[in-house]
Length: 311
Image (cartoon, rainbow, N blue to C red; front, top):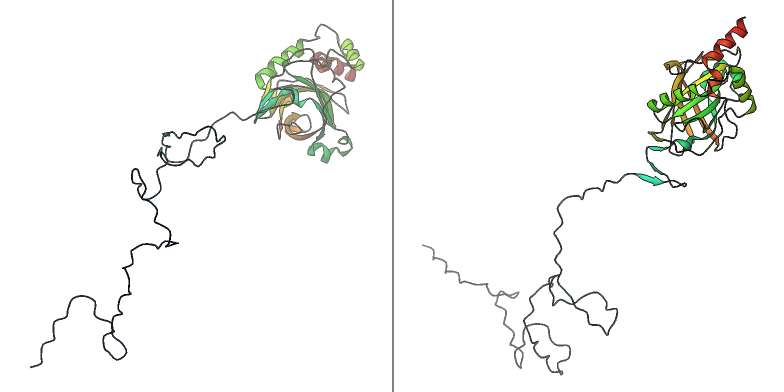
């Protein structure tokens, strides 16, 4: 029967050398035993005295600890600085809410305009017009198409304009919305109604006709869209069209930016369709010439023109 192995002693086994014998332990150095911790830089200097006062805990001091040193520099060494504990309200979790403010910008003349609108007076000026329908079918008539917009002394409800669309020319009334345009059209239709057509034509040729620009407070335009009605005549036959207020002679222009430089327009015109599209680009901010009076293209004028033309 084989001998049973000796019981193993507890603890780490002794280190062995190359021959398998236990390594002899080195004798401890002479002198007093070495203390734990980092040795002093200069052993000849006496040890620092133990600090007095409350024992400082381990780790970084709290921010609201009044005994913690302040990191802010002192502006005046003669004035002692005192650190007071301030308790801030805990911030809520999550992304902070966006501050909702009205997107508004101040114009040069002091008026405030929103991101989607501007004063109606801003569209005053001269615009060159482009209409694909006219350019393709009447190229010779599409060379000097133009729109002039200015104020009128008859009413502050809107603006008045003179247009040349190649095969048509006449007068437009502009307003910020459809209800205002309806009122503006009624006022302009009654204006000068007591005078006869010859007097109106004479006023038109003199360049006045009661449509001189003057200072007025215009209504704000919403969504950059301005509504208009038009009256006018055919440039070839001279036929007058005075059915304003109907779908065929109403439309709108919509500007691309708040600067009111370029617009896209839609309206109904004879020989061009009920939804004819056209574009405009501002070439001058001032409209020196007043357009023909609105009453120049009234129904009475249309009837008189028909009698003169057909006999």
